[in-house]
Length: 404
Length: 143
Ligand SMILES: Cc1ncc(COP(=O)(O)O)c(C=O)c1O
Figure 1 (cartoon, helix red, strand yellow):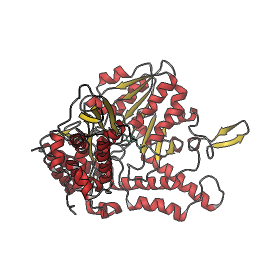
Figure 2 (cartoon, helix red, strand yellow):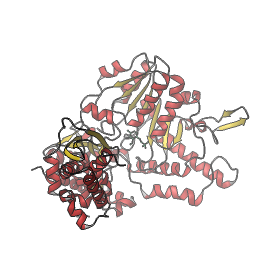
Figure 3 (cartoon, protein in one colour):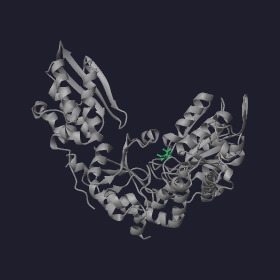
Figure 4 (cartoon, rainbow over the protein chains, first blue to last red):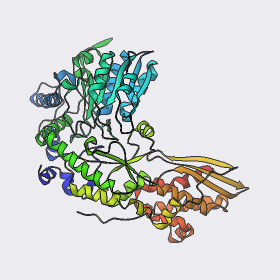
């Protein structure tokens, strides 16, 4: 990979002097994505699906082509199974309000892993509360892994739905989703996979993993903010009631009711984010051009370099696996005696952008016995120099807070 | 491109953070209130003991960044022995210092708390610096 050529594709990286290591929060965007979004407005802007004039047909075609790009990117059998949303959070809420409130009742159980982002936890707490269903947590080991016994014990005949993350946004560990999905199916439950942190780093194939629902945000995948995806199996989506109602999701409306549009438009009420979809499609083409093999190699190189440097610093504790292969670009850590906000403030003063806090995963941190932590997260466009700058600055944190 | 690094963790701050004078529970406190920064999770419990109008003792417990903890510790050193009114006056000066609106003379009257004056240039940390003082205002019945 020619890293300077890659970095040239990212206008912000070219002008911003800081080392951006908060990629798990949102990635930077290449020129081609920004251009694709802009080009929609400059050349094709009209409301999709509404007009019969050429401009509106163009806009519709761009939007629907973006859907096909997403379909192919994740190996979905049909366009009808790709719903555009604002982000992963909205995708999960769609499933919770539509599928969850319809199919889960008193006495049923929902299983949520303790490693979930709040986005894949709170909607299920809501469903359990409203429907009087049980909510059970699938607990992980110290390194974030899930044992077969824990999986078999949590997911049972009573389970109706399992919410499970592919890659944890705190530990970076890639979970064996195949195993959890199989167990869920054996018990007659459906499985919602949160691929927000995996899809920027690895190939996702819904045909292969057999997820019933799979969600992610475009903005972590080099795409624009405000566009996300819900993949759902057609036979499930087909039977689900709409999430939001209004324009663009109907066939006909009478005084006393309406018939809804077919999939996928049934779930896309109101004017859609067509420019965002065009940007996301372009981001996927860009990722394919770079190639997941190269991305993986680069993730591992940079992670190994960071972990090696961090291991040599006293009082730095890495959460999760000690192996660079298990991080998918995400390194969360604590520094003895120093609050994560002070760690990030020192790094920031040295021109390194990281994140500090509970990372929207409070129950996981509590389970791991930490209140809050600092997270550095890497993308393939980061450089070895940036990693070294991060490590050098980290080595000074305790001293700068007065610990000698 | 290397960025010139700044260090705002001066010795007064780091000392109060590492070796706080007032970070403990207070027996027989007359007033007790929790202060929280929901954004970053800084969390303190402020406790005061009063004799008439005078703050005769005080302490805090909690968890948070060095700035929030050191600022609370410095604050207690300053207000113990003062009347309610004097303490609220200092709080007013401190808040204005953080906004960059206090005079040099006023800032001098804050003694060690003046070590936090540079926070005025760091919007992200302002809430940490004022947590103890805001909790004090609330506890003494302002706001
Ligand atoms: C694992 C995981 N799930 C869900 C989300 C929520 O993403 P968004 O805020 O884009 O909806 C995030 C992002 O922070 C995440 O890391």
